[in-house]
Image (cartoon, rainbow over all chains, first blue to last red; front, top):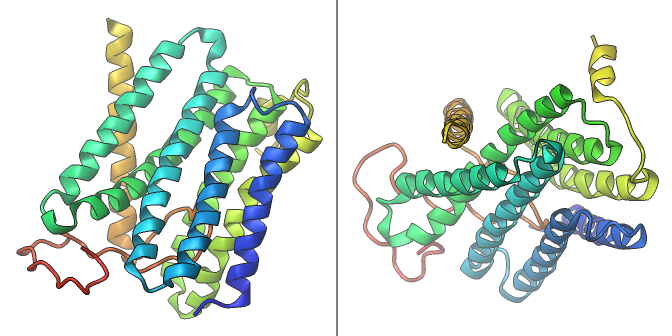
Length: 232
Length: 68
């Protein structure tokens, strides 16, 4: 059953996603961070369309299930391109854009092939399973890529505060989902809590990006290596 | 050429690392879904596994089944 909590967090998340795009436009950063903003728009569109499909066909309908998993696969591919664009931005001084693009295409194709190999026997539900598997696999690839990117940023002494904020927010999002999953397995008797947290965690990323666009100017600089030293 | 090979090697390394991580998580987890819920909305039932755990593929479900 869908309660007011589900609708409230869903609405909050959708409004925050819209706010990110509005803040980026207001600060004149929409084109500079085009992949991030396009991804937020895609998430926003996905949320609104899901609401339409849900209210038309219902939660238990196959239409909603198909739409949910296909749109999720699409938004995860979008997230993957956001990560690729952040890599390009961090490595732009090394002039390796061509190699970043090549790696991104290779990794996406590799993930698609692995997903297909996993689901190829389920011929009668191949497309659905493929979308679901690709989504899950890309999620893990994204998680590894985000931690790697943070390592690269520390190594290259990336100092653009906005870029640092974007990457750290993504890292924190992945970490929170992973922690929630681990805790759900450790303490299954409070599963209601672990099931209630993901919608809140979802709101975190647009909130953090909104804050970044609003409060952190493009020229702001920070030394992430100092942050790492301070935590030791 | 060596740069391209390095990129390919690193890409494969990331892919293997991610798939290995996924395998560890799925093996030690309760089999439930772990992923960001982009776009919001309640999660519908998970599509049935095609070949997870081995065994023959079950017959095609009837038209009324939620997953086809």
